[in-house]
Each structure stands twice: as structure tokens, then as C-alpha cells.
Length: 485
Image (cartoon, rainbow, N blue to C red):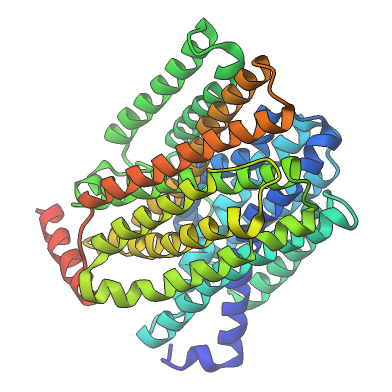
């Protein structure tokens, strides 16, 4: 394939199609947030269980991410992309028609499975289609820009749709887009000459890790109601631990493990993934709690809440744009640590919530500071996570980083929502007004988010410090020789 393939009409269409997959997934992750209060009122969610509309999607997305990447290698990337898009579109349609909280959460869980198939397939198609350095660099640059655009469009679209035809349309917009992607994939990519065979696919491992994480988060979500010391909570959390331990044992002895444990011998990889997991736990939860505060305490309309997030998108772009230049000068580790520290300060400022607070003086400064740190952190940790990874394990390393992001978001929501609810109930029992009690609960949760991101800064001290792509390539060659030996 020539170096100028991206400049051809076909190359541009393929890039547009693959970025459309990322756009659909990332929009769906943010478009629901603004609609949460309307969803709660219409389907009678409790405050504690409402987070499953967000965390359910994140959990199955993260749980099935490794399986999705492996399936794309075994069954063919186009085939898995089509399958994932179909699942995603059908689940979105079912979610739009859901008439109960359980049905909507089920649809969101299924959407996560579809996204876990779509995204690894699309990323691997992007990598294999644009093989030359210049084209690939430009393609990934566009892919990254789409992420920021999708976040802004998601919150705006969520507000417009919820205020207009209703919250169900945040789900109904997905099926038509899914059809467009499927038609484009059928026309742009040739069918793979691969037979469907489940040989080499670690279904047992995928089941164990997903079931373990589901049970873990379920136990954390229900613990405030059941009691942290109740036998049911203990059994749920212990059961999750057993499933995850069995998963590790299965991977140790499996012929074709979903997660080869040798990848964890790469220096700095675990620290980068844990940094991502802990940091995202704070960031994802932040948006959930801020949305509840703006709409339930301050009375923002969905569209106003959506517009309130726009400065975050701009500030993230500033941080992400500065990160490559800073990495070239000081390396990834200082950028990640500094980004997490800055973001933690911003979230702490946001935690100082007040009833009838001001957006300009109360929310905006913290949002901007947090978002600049977020941009630095994500670019830096992505670079650090891939530094020293042998070429034959590059896809696995990318899947681990993505899985850390999704699972971190789900676990963060479960833990911090429990903190918020516990504080809310305590304040209500003390005779505080509902608005003040909710504000106090959300403030405590945001403070916990700030602590989580600060912890990510400390963990990042163990990541590898890489200054350039060439240095990362050299480290990868060394690691490949070490692991081979």
C-alpha cells in the first residue's frame, strides 16, 4: 500500500468509517449522562441503582474487551466489526423501548458487549489498513481528535434530545448510525478468508473475568443497602474474588489464554494500567455526580447541563495538545504525574459544592483545571503503557489499557456512589433539607474522586519514563529479546 493511500478517496472513506465507530461508542458513553435525571423519573430508578445505566455499559465493555480483540484475530476483523455493530444497534433499540429499569440496564449491558467487539476490530483495521508511517500517524491523529469531538457532541446531543423528543432518543439515534457503519464496512473491506472456529478462543477465561467483575460491582452497589458486614455482601464480594482467582489460574494453564500472564513481566506496564484504572475511576464518576448536582440541586435543564460541559472539551484539548511536546522534553512519567496532580486539584475545587452555587465561580474553574490535567494524563499514560511492549503483544497491551479504563469507570461509580448515598442518608436522618443532603453526599463523592486521581499520580511514579517513539521502539526490541529468552 502506498504512503499516499490516505489522500485517496477510498482511504479517506475508510478513515471516516473507522472514526465513525469510535464516534458512536464515545458519544454513547457521554450522551446518557445528561439524560439520567429524566431516566430516573420515568423508569423509577433509585439514586443508588441509577449508576447502573452508566456502569453497566462500562463493565461489560471492559470485561469483554480482551475477548473482542482475540475474536477479531481469529474470526476476521470485518466479521467481528459487523457482529459487534449489530449487537450494539439492536441493544440500543431495545433500550429505547425499555419500560422498566431492569430492561434498560440489560440493554446497556448488551451495548457494552457490542462495543467491546466493535472497538478492537476497528482499531486493528485502522492499524492494518494504514501501514505507512505518515498515513498511520495522520490516521491516529484524526482518531484522537474524534474522541474529543464525540465527548462534546455527546453532552450537547443528550441535552437537545432529552429536552426535545425525550430521553429515549439518546438510544434511538444509535441504530441508524449502526446501519451506516455496517453498510460501509461491507463495501470498504473485503471478506476475510477465515473459518469460524472456537479453537484457541478462551471462552472460559472471558466468562470468569466478566462474571467476577459483575459480581464485584454488584456487591459494591448493594452494600450500602444490605450493610457492608451483612452475610450477603460478604458472600457476593468473596464470590467475586474466587471467580477472579480462578480466572488467573485458568490463564496460567490455558493453551490459548485470553490474557497471557507473561505480558505483566514488561516493566512499567502494570503501573501504567493501574494508573489508568484508578484515574478513570475518579474521572468517570466526576461527570456522573456533577450531572446530578446541576440538574437535581441547581435545576439545570438537560440542554444547559450539556452546554456546561463544553469548556471541559476545550481544556482537555489544550492539555492533550501540550502533552507530546512536554513528553519530548521531560518524558512520560513527569507528564502523567503532573497531569494527575493538576486534575486532582481541579476535582477538589469542584467538590466544594453549595446549594444555589454559581457556575462561573463555583464550577468553571475546577472544570478547566481538571480537564487540562486530564489531557496530560491520558496522552502520557497511553504512551507509557505501550513503551517496551514487544510488537507481537502490542494489541494485547492496547486491550489491557482500554479494559483498565472501562473497569476503572465501573468500579469508581460503584464505590463513590456508595459513599454519596451513605452521606445523603446520614444528612437526611439529621434533619437536613433534601437539597442540602444531596449536595453534601455529592461533595463527599467528588472529594473521594479527587483522592483517587491523586493516588493515580503516586502510582504513576512506577511507570516507565519514555521521551520519544524511537526510544519506545528500542525498549520494545529489548523486551522482546528478554521475553523470548
